Image 1 (cartoon, rainbow, N blue to C red):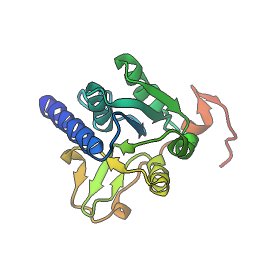
Image 2 (tube, rainbow, N blue to C red):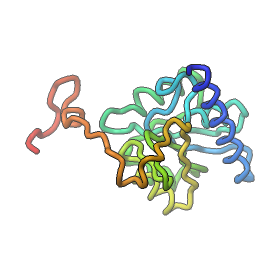
Image 3 (cartoon, rainbow, N blue to C red):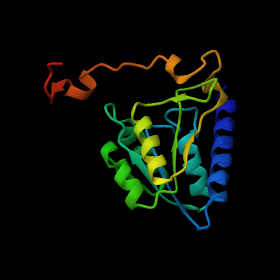
Image 4 (cartoon, one colour):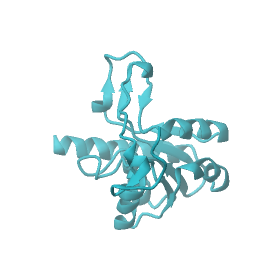
Length: 185
């Protein structure tokens, strides 16, 4: 399973990189990602971060912008860490900066992973992914979901059938067990 996952992720990365590059006339591209889709979330290479890795290996990545991914900060804790560890040119941004970053920083594509892909093609990922898709559409930026076939659940007809994980409110209102926000909900 480990070898298959790494091989699948490398193929996703390579196909994704080639597809993105086929649509741009310039030498390098700028990618925006969300959450963690790298080697810390997969068996070793990553899905959306695999696309970024492939672009970087080809010498065609100008920069990756990764969102913090509230409330659990997988983008800042994990994606940014992987980028620094591998020398990938990256900038960590707050989730609320994504639309402005798309407008101001010449984003070539948004690439995210998926927790689930259903029969009609709807996907579920971290909750902030939806607003990224809307902002990308508004700015005319291609939006890609990089996911292995193991993320597909064809028994569900549409995204409305996906049960979305509800996280504990303390992830937003506390930091290391210390309250940092109002706690009456």
